[in-house]
Length: 208
Image (cartoon, rainbow, N blue to C red; front, side):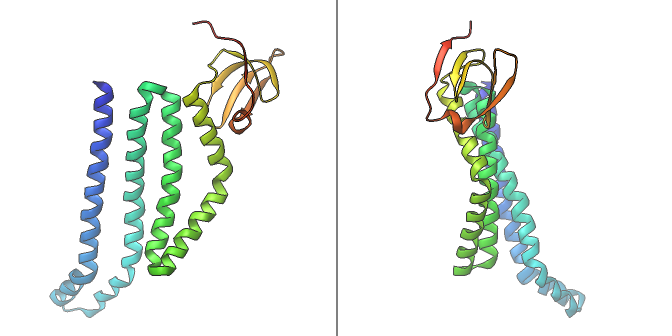
């Protein structure tokens, strides 16, 4: 019941945020087209029409804030769905990955929308490409770590040979690193990308 409630609440927030976003954007659009003119006629002051010049800045701020709220709601929904089956660490990894990808898409989308037309598409694609290159190593690590968390080739306290480390004890598994302990007591952080695609030897399973 708690899982259903958590997913339901996250989905409810997502729907509410989308509805609120549509309503607020419609109000802003009306205000900067017809509303300002009505206000200028009511106050008999034409200078107030200069407010129209700031419409794009208001839209950017509103889109970014509400868009980030929507991204967070989507991430929370996936976290609520995955945590009961795969554990909190995997759920948190998926949530973080969705936030990173969502933020990149949000920035690229807003930039493209502001520019408009073919120029907007080109600008949005360029910014998305820049964000992709800037975060490719982190995203690669995160995705590799996510596969490890989902596939579960080893568990905490297993003794394994992995990524050139022999007979090490798994202490923690996260999206970016798997933390292992050597026999001499040294702690080693093994990048997730080094584990994916390499042979893993399970020397001893953790006692249940």
